[in-house]
Length: 151
Figure (tube, rainbow, N blue to C red):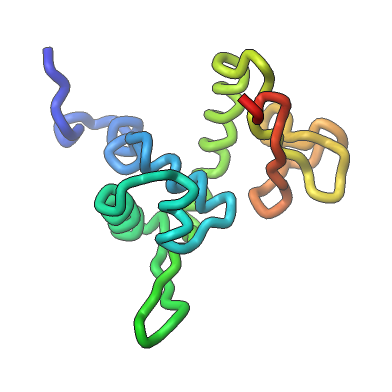
């Protein structure tokens, strides 16, 4: 059986979500946005993505309300892409996916360690600080290279 290219016939929130964020490049664009990437050329540099693919992903993420396009320069017009509230709501999903990947696909340790800003703790279970127990938000963490970063 061949899977259809979309999930219109499925009454399933997972399938509908995958229609929007279910491909590799889209999730990596969103990850980069959480890392502070804003401009087209910076996305391209960080991801090594083809211009046409990046244009497609950024357009779709804006259409879906996950990113918003904001002009930062006139003559010529230049834009940057910022996460919306809907986009920021993907942070728990991104962190859970990262932690799952660290457990199952990072034999030398996590490539990135996320820690609580101003605290000694790392991002723990249920998105809480493993030192102070505070439930963390994206603006309360920093990402640093982990033991598996050099591989």
